[in-house]
Image (cartoon, rainbow, N blue to C red; front, side, top):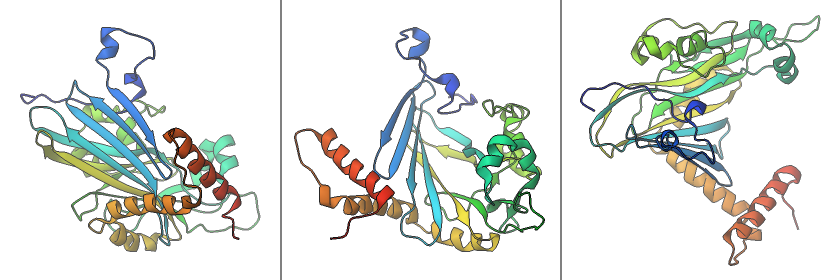
Length: 296
């Protein structure tokens, strides 16, 4: 408003309301809601103070030969003035893949970082690939790791992939708790993207960088990100071409809902209590995931 700049972090624990505390200060904090479906989860934050509404929807990508968790972040200008938005949206930490990492991450997490690295599917920042150099095992043989995790992001309605900020220190500085984005206190998103990043021998981030998008009152922008695993870094351009196709994310979201309805159609229940109906459906789905679908 009137050329004023502000920095906000939707869903930050520092701005969470305290249940049962009724004060003027609490009333000024954003309102948050969570919605859970059979194959989706959505959180939203309503920040009337800044005139910004943020919603984040997650669902599992259905019916593809590559795996992905899809994140769709929608930011809406609910104020009375234009807002020029620069944002980092994504994951503060993205662990690589390679070998049996659960024990190592719990017990020698800092040592394990020596095997970690961020590689790239092309010569841009749009296709980072998070993998281990070799399998971290106590063995005389050395196994080269080729599989890894990826992050692919874009603005819905546009075909260009967004640059990914993977260097955690560029965002959080020396705040190792990853709760304070101190890097953004002194630098803009454009500054971070323009400067070198380092992803070797450290746990990295996966933030899609959005630079200077102007939203009129009532206007929205949706940032869609795909996080998944690929067998090799060479697979990333092919995956990116598929997922960034116009309408792909929204079509897959609708298909994910349809698929859940199809899988649970045999126990479809109609009573006066919609919560009971949903519980039957969810219980059947959970048991099917654990034990398989019955065949008669």
